[in-house]
Structure formats: structure tokens, C-alpha cells
Image (cartoon, rainbow over all chains, first blue to last red; front, side, top):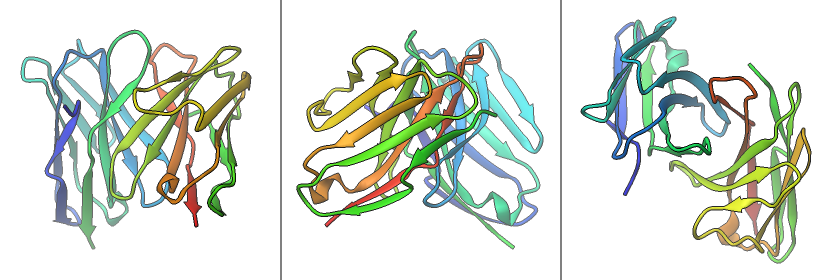
Amino acid sequence: SQQGEEDPQALSIQEGENATMNCSYKTSINNLQWYRQNSGRGLVHLILIRSNEREKHSGRLRVTLDTSKKSSSLLITASRAADTASYFCATERGANSKLTFGKGITLSVRP
Amino acid sequence: GAVVSQHPSRVICKSGTSVKIECRSLDFQATTMFWYRQFPKKSLMLMATSNEGSKATYEQGVEKDKFLINHASLTLSTLTVTSAHPEDSSFYICSSLSPGIFDEQFFGPGTRLTVL
């Protein structure tokens, strides 16, 4: 089973709008992380939220975590064309720091 | 954030040859590095955990004799794809575990392997 599944799988919005992406997971976690990947590139770490945290902000990013529902959301406010990328959630559980990635969401921001 | 480099960024090779990919942490010592592979429009799949000075730990289904990992120093881990075949064509990404307390992984830019 997939640990870390995002929805929607693809999202297309107009520049200036907000983008909300969701991630669900199945087992208990230490933390959940969101990454961005531009086409053909490596991953950029966006934000890490621990299991005892409920919300974190970083610039235009807002991440929430609901451990009772085993879900997280990533909100990008006032989106820009440069936000166009694939976004992945990844969960870390156990003591070995391994990350399990979701399938990713492709975000397209139209100028 | 910390910088992780990979070399080469892109490699094309003939079927049956071996390819070595390097992953370097440039500004911190990394006792643990991870190797992932990513197929087009797919997620990252963890292949193995590379530990400095000891054998790598492979995920289920990953052939250790096929994907040789060496972590000989605190700044360098290498992945060698032995006797590569077209189905090994993929995007290989490494990451280094940060030495800080936040368990953040810093990812390399990836290596695109194409096996003809």
C-alpha cells in the first residue's frame, strides 16, 4: 500500500490563486515533509512538520497536519508561474530516517 | 541549506556496461546517504541506505549485486549500476541526511541514466 498519497494528481490554476494539495498516509509517522521538483531536476525541501505539530508556515506556504485523519495539506497562496512543478509529500517513520514518498501532484500555474 | 552534488548529471551507455554515479555532500559530513530512483512521472522509490564505513542496506526487491553502493568517506557515496540494461534507464537521485536535529534530507540534482 502507498504510504503518502496526494490528491489531486494534477492541478491547474491561474496566477494569483491559491493552490491546495492534500496528502494522506496510512501508518503513524515521526514527521511529514513536502518537496518540490521541477521537471528533470532534484528535489527541493519545502517544509517539515512533526507529528506533534498541527500547522507551519513558511513564506507563502502553509502546511497542516491532522494525525487523527492521517492527512496533511499544503497551501500555496498567491501562486506564481514559477510555482509550476511537481509536489511530493513524504513521511518519515521509525528511527532510520527513511522517507516514503507519495505519487506527487503536478501543479500548473497559468500566467 | 546544505549542498549535495551528483555526477554525472546525464549518462548514456550501451547495454551490458557498468555506470558509476557519485553523490557528494559539499559542506557537511554525511554518515548516511540514500539512493532513490524515479521513473518518468512517477514517485521516488528508495533503493538503499548508504552508511559510511559499512555495508549498504537495500530495500526489498532491489538487487544488491546489480546496484553496488560504496560509502567510503563522509562526503562521498557511489552507486554503480552493473551490466546495465534498458530497463535500468531511470532518474537516480541521492540524498544526504542532515547532521542537524530536524532530520532533513538534502537531495542531489539527480542523474539521468539512459541505457541503449
